Length: 103
Image 1 (cartoon, one colour):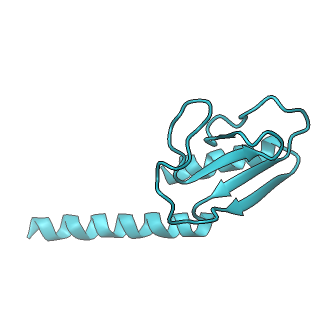
Image 2: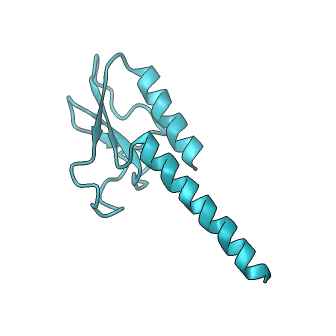
């Protein structure tokens, strides 16, 4: 999941000349606050938005509108470092739980 998220972010960065990377204004906002304009899925970890028409979508779609020469914003709940650290903690917890259940 982490690799897919980071891969999608990288694709967005390569797709556009200039992408503004911006953290969520409120990182504690509900998971269902932002939805993709293309597929209606929740965009919990990150989403892209057009600075011209303000449409937003998940990073999976890369494009969210038909604006020409658009400037995109990559909105992120977690930085790459924070995301990586979180997944390391989850993996460590899983490994610890596995060891406890065997005893």
